[in-house]
Picture 1 (cartoon, rainbow, N blue to C red):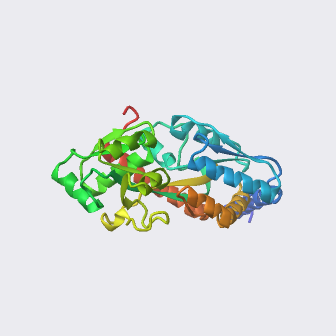
Picture 2 (cartoon, rainbow, N blue to C red):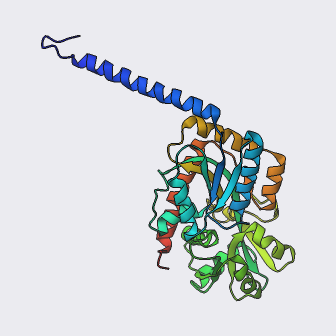
Length: 334
């Protein structure tokens, strides 16, 4: 309708705006569809912000191998280490959102925002493709320590606050944060003894110079099988396939769960059809028997969820570890 003044009436302006919005949306979809159909048509880079040989690196190389086979393109792993994963993760955040630069990060991704000032926003600057795998930890002690169960550890810790010591592979690491969550949920007080890596802590743990430690199954399993370390509980809600006789800590501390994990992701605003293609292939890869077997050797349990589930999981992890770090009083200066 045209008003007497010659101006377009409000209702007509509204209809015009709706039509324009729909045309823009359709245009965007039409532009994205051919790109997704052609994707990938050049090499894919998977940035791993940790050194070669670790669980994230090994998992990323599995994906690179399978992407190359499925799509007949070269997929490579690029290790960009430093600053507890921040340097490599920042490269992912600032990459072009076209699906050709991806990243595979771990639990430190959710811990870093609570400890460090970051050059990216962990919740908004990424497209999360899928959670690749979950890695439960295990609470272990040397044979000299009196406690033979999680319940007995709690009893000793409550009887003599701060007298019990726990080792970790470093401040802010998953072993450290698993212990801090344990303290937060039980109210016990224990003294942190950080080491430069898990292997550096094991001799003191075995000798009884430090009481307990949360560590990965893969790192502790040789010592457990040799009866040098005693397993008390796993940090996942279910038992580990490698140690089926060891109960979850959640049996004693209801709701407790602390697992390391991997997430395949890229920068924000990757076109939805490309994300869907990446997710579909990633889930297919994680279901393959050879991949499941290789992950099991790392102490990992394959996940393979959809992008929405992955984003919700990461958001929950960010909230969980921010609360834990705050309660522990951890800062970047410590």
